[in-house]
Amino acid sequence: MRQQGMSFAALPAVSLLFAAALALVNLWLGVRASAARVARKVMVGDGGDPLVQARMRAHANFNEYVPMALVLMALIEMAGGGATPLYVAGIVLVLARVLHPFGMERPAPNPLRMIGIALTLAVMVALIGWAVWILLHRG
Image 1 (cartoon, helix red, strand yellow):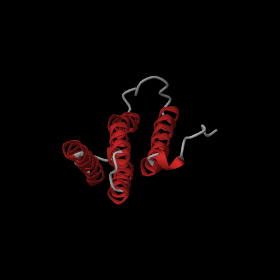
Image 2 (cartoon, one colour; image 1 turned 135 degrees about the vertical axis):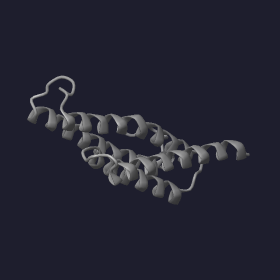
Image 3 (spheres, rainbow, N blue to C red; image 1 turned 180 degrees about the horizontal axis):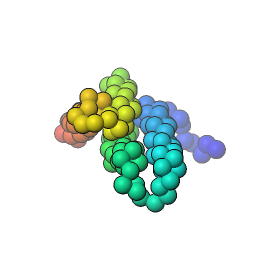
Image 4 (cartoon, rainbow, N blue to C red; image 1 turned 45 degrees about the vertical axis):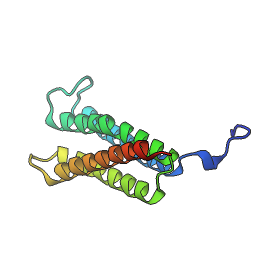
C-alpha cells in the first residue's frame, strides 16, 4: 500500500533492484547450506564436515559484506550518484557473490574464491571512495 504523498521516484530504484537480486543469492546460499547439513545429518553447527563448513562460511561471508555494500549503494543513489556506475557495481557484486561460494568448496588456492573476494573488495572500496567523494564535494 502506497502512502499518500510518497512517490516511487523517491525510491533508490537501482539499489532496490540489486537488494532483491542479492536477497535471492542469500536465499540460495542458505538453502545450499541447509541441504548440506541435512544430507550429512548435521543438525547443529558444522559437525566438522568440510562441505557443511564451506557452505556455512560462504553464507556467513555473504552476510558480512553485502549489507554494507547495499547501504552504501542506496545512500549514494539517494545523494544523486549516477545510475550507470551503480548498475556496474551491482552487477559486479552479484557476480562476485555467486563465484565465491563455488570456490569455497574447492581446494585452496582457488580462482573462483579469489575472484569473488577480489571483486567484492573492489566494489566495497569503490563505494566507500564514492561516498567520501560525495561528502567532500557536496554543495
